[in-house]
Length: 246
Length: 243
Image (cartoon, rainbow over all chains, first blue to last red; front, top):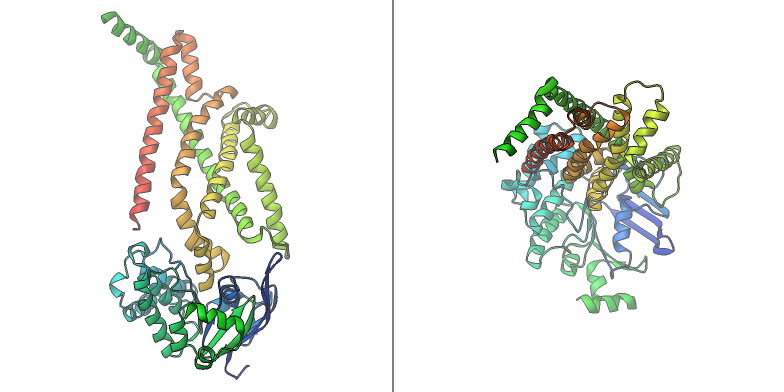
């Protein structure tokens, strides 16, 4: 039994698509309660890194230890561990053939063995939290982008995960809807949820990030607390990157 | 003018009333519908299974190495499925039914069973490709969202992918059923006494090919219109269940 605070430990993670080496050896530790914000240029491998954490991308090498278990081991039932890792996508990926409520209850009912009543009660509580309780019986295509993404966040939360993975959650949104999604994420961070967030929102990184990670050409070239990271960047590539986005 | 109408009346009288020929046509229609219905069911089941094999291979294994026994099994099934689809779609149904009747079931007296088998197997190949294209047309994000919640491949298919895929392919499936219904007329070449065969037979007695063939065509058309209408109702119902 691991008693320390490390929730996810990544050792020498590599990922190649054919001859293209996207990740070239990533090492990272994510503690319980951490909000790790991953930044980097497009094509740097930051999204691939995030998608490796719950094995949506199969790593080519290295290990990922989640709650003390090496989930890259073939004998591990990854579906069990994914239940504990919520994920939010750039394109929302709500299930269009189900109501908002059913989007939220499907996992808890089918995988966690909750009763329908229990799952619906829990789902309504989550929807109230994001102010969308009146949309419970609407279908996803009746929602705005910001509403969809907020629903996607609580769909992941309905599984009661130990960590939330965000893959550029605001990149597909109209500018006026970015705020409402970030607000939900900030609230989540304040409540102590462990989060790994790939984003271009530097304001969010500065405000709620506990550990900022800069990925360049498949490796982490610099990381640190937001104050030091943004105030005194050392790596020239990071300086260049920050000068472009800030 | 009067001659013209009495001519039509005379033709219809010979076509339908003499020797109770309307009963023969009705029986022929019954056999046509029976063959079409059973081979539609057979074709749908077969095509569904083959389509699942093909798309599972495409989604899970394509471009990857086989590692477990189940991987090799899937790969073997996919090869068989692909040969099946290629051969069936690449040869005329007329040749297929003659092979089935004169070669495979050379001792058969009655052509109905070989015909059902032929049309079922034939339709299965088309339904398989319709299924596969329906599954592959679902956005990859749907798979990922479902897998990230913790559903395995099978449950992702059942809860997330198939409900969306089947709704999308319904028009194509309906079209396939209509094609199949008309294709059953080929069975007259192996002496199955279905609608086209019956029409031919009546024509050979009345020597009025025009009237009996037009009548047969009209009956097919009415049946197709009824099926189209029913399919439209079904589609509308499925669309009502969301949006």
